[in-house]
Length: 519
Image (cartoon, rainbow, N blue to C red; front, side, top):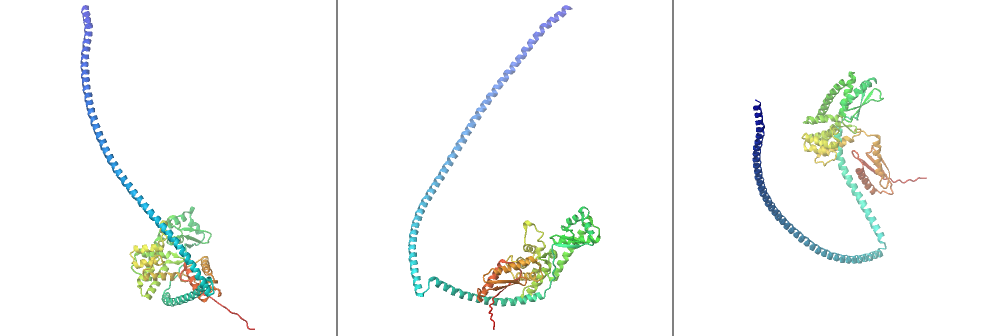
């Protein structure tokens, strides 16, 4: 048994190394075969890549050569074209230089010719001057007067004759024109004014609301000023609460908003309940009331003037004029007055009265919206009125009358001229417009200063509220003929330098007195 074990062990000892050796030899052989195949394959791949690279290299080189040849050909072509252009330019420049040389030569010849002519003319001038001097000396010898004395004598004679003839002609022409114009104008205007009467309402930018007591001021202001802030915010009107007893002043340039605030505040005072919610309710009621009043006033104005077929929006705009003033004159009353005057004037001269009345009523409609426009796009009430008339499809005659009633454009019809006349009559009517004492004094002073600026005027007096100026002249300086020319000159200067409604009469007075005493 032990021998068997030993034999087995010896066998194992011998067999294991032999097996390992044989196995390693086999694996090594296999590995060497695989490595040899891989190396052969790698060499074939490398050879193939080298061949492909060589082919690509040759193709790229061929393409580069072709591109280089193409670029070279194009560059040579461009160079040839530019050389041709440069050659042409050089040719043109050379031709221009030759032409300039020829012109310079011609100019030099002309200059020499002109110099020669100037020298000849100078010689001729000297000859003429010498002959003229001899002629003057001969005339002075014959007449017994110097040239200056003769000139003064002739000028004075001609001046006196021309002045007398001019004054006579001007006086006769003005008298004739005045007689004819005054006769026709007075008949038309007197008839029209006699048949028209209009009320005058003076308004301003403030409204005063009377309070039952001073305690009401505190209620209007409210706790921490809530009530007054609410009222100002909703109406856009400033409330002035000062020391004036039992009165609150509403201030705003928008008369419609001011009227809404006045009505709302009066309703709140009567109601007695003054708080933000009640204020909002009363403001809404006041707005509705004012809107109704605006519509009613517009309709009434159209009815009073006999103008029909107006657009509802035009009616509303006319109603808004009730709360608009111009120099203290109510614009709606003024528009009605102009419409009536224009209709009467149109009847006198034979023009369609309906168109004249319609144009007169709408001539100041732009004043209803002039305060609402953006400052960056500010327009006059004339331009706004024209836009409104175009918007609501008014006739071209009415549009032109609105555009021309202040002379912004030329009148194209008799209706436009009648609107100008009626507008001036209504504005210049005594009492129609307010004027501060300072403005009145300045206007009177300016009128007198214009008259005093003329030589020979002793004193001047502005009378009849500036509608006439009486000019006293020095009799020794101003003759009867000079008076006509002086009156004309003063009139022209007033027209050019001053602004005034209607017309100003210039009355020049020359007075000579001789005083003696019987003893």
